Length: 117
Length: 110
View 1 (cartoon, rainbow over the protein chains, first blue to last red):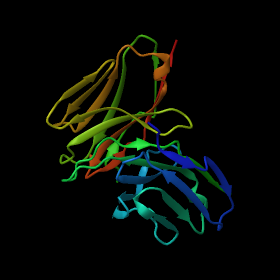
View 2 (tube, chains in turn blue, yellow):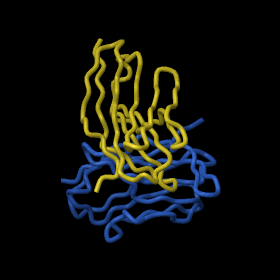
View 3 (cartoon, rainbow over the protein chains, first blue to last red):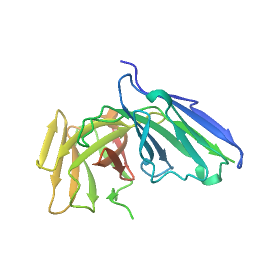
């Protein structure tokens, strides 16, 4: 079974530039997550999709971050304009979902390491 | 405010001995807890989980203990192997969303 795919693996940009990350979840997984992991910290959820609808985006800095999941499969996360503090690893994860709020284990992709200079 | 805390950033253990990783949480309403393992340049991978209706769950060399009154969980690895060297994150599942601790880097020396 293919895992969660992410690209690019590494990206270096200057502040105020824009950047986009792509994620392809495991086939059949309805729920998709984007996490931000700053060095020395645990991953922090940015946004959660159920199919192509947003379940939780309470921690997404919406003035500069946006995400979409067209057709309920692939997803892109965009930052525009980037700031120095956006330097982090951006992780995509997917999972099955049960009605009633119970979810299965989340499977993570390898992440995209973003450096903003 | 951190809802999940791992107070030890690193741990070094001799091969064959027990590794004990600790995690504290703040909300007594949390009811599902997980441990993830992360190697460099890879995403976290699920290791073991426990529901709040249990106080212990075992899977091979890995055992997770939950102390609800203390709001504390721990991961025991016995015996520790060099391949276990990685960063370990504890997490709580809150409505399908994972809230992670800061991680503990385990180093198992031959």
